Image 1: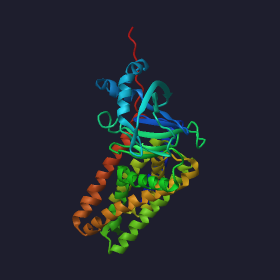
Image 2: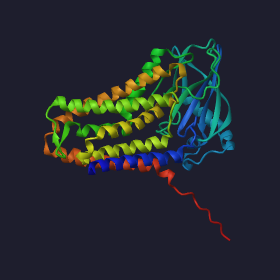
Image 3: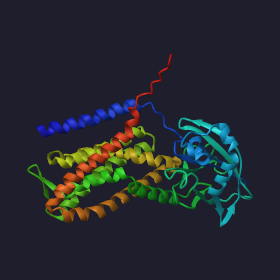
Length: 402
């Protein structure tokens, strides 16, 4: 009875947390533009290729006057610094077709106000295109190494008269990370196979680089080579038993995040990013807490499924900005999900044999089940505070003298 009451209490706290944060954030709108990101839009016709680079004024300040940190440039400062900015982006954005490098001429600046801040729009024209090709190769490393290694760049087809696309602000064609080099940009519809391969790769890398998802998976794997005997952990009897336990856990997690990933991808149900990231952090702590108390762990599949739903929204938050037109969302979703599963399977295959080989050692219960769980809880709580602290920072009081 005590165990059931404990389980109910934890689930009640989980529901309370979700409800409070949801009510707090439900009115926060989604943003087409985000901080720490820049965008390259292309406008395509049969014989011309032009576009614009959009960068926040805070980011441009890091180029023009890095000594002032993130204090944004004023619009007048952007205009005055235009020759410097023009040269900077000409050197860091290159376009190729059949190993021929296109010359890019920047031709003015405008401004766009968004909820993420004011963006400068640096217009450009690609010279001597002739007949616009179906694909080009593009490299883009602006804002990265010497300015901000956490910056992300995105390329989009803003308009395309050949496909009747106009004013596209949502479907991102390429994502640039530091060191990516050249990537192929399709100036017409991207082939279905290429869509599948691109999103498969993104799924794999998202798991491997998503440390919170990796830690959640490890928190599930640590006790998977054990079983509960009279309220205490004991080593599993054989490989088959341990492997079946692991498969069941990962399958429950997969089913849960597949449901919400699908719902979010097709805009049937979405949740605020801060809510999702906060609950993902708490999910690691609660699963690790269950490892510390084996009686609680016997019903862990309920917790795994419940939090797996939120991890699905977390995957969707990464999938959404990669962009895809509605006709091919199903292909991208399926490929991304397969990539996530391949990434998870690789982690399981790497970690599970080690845990299984160590399960009989008495030190395993202390180092992995106890100390490891405490460490996971500490990291998870740190992430939770880090991801939610801005919600609780009081407004600055301004006191006027008299």
